[in-house]
Image 1 (tube, rainbow, N blue to C red):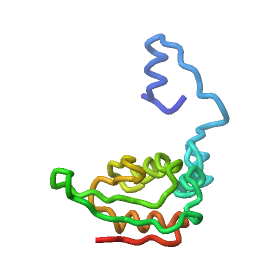
Image 2: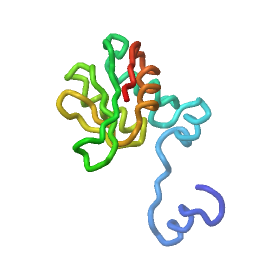
Image 3: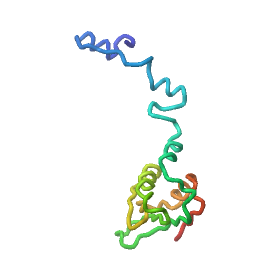
Amino acid sequence: MAGKGSLGNLLAKAGIAVREPAGDGDAGTEAARAGETPRGPRDAASAARADLPDLSRAGKLVLRRERKGRGGKTVTVLDGLPATDLPEIARALKKALGCGATVEEGAVVLLGDLADRARDWLEARGARRVVVGN
């Protein structure tokens, strides 16, 4: 148990059985010393890359901004990806850019004016030819 006044001591005084944590000490602290979080490597970008399809094989990717038919709200549309990879890439873009994203008519739609940030993200994952329109 930890020092005087710890939660474990208070529960023991109240007559509640307290178990010691399993393992050789605090796994989170040991993992932090090793440069990892308890769930995996600290570099989330490398973990995300393993889950995504290889974007270096994608041809020309087009990012364009649209407002028409969306109630005056700006969205960024990403075209040029294979249809089978769209849901995975939309999910990863949502996490990376902190925005909403969906798949509509064979394209990924990002909620907001995010063309520059999306281009940087795609290029960091191996996309060779990314064109930003209007």
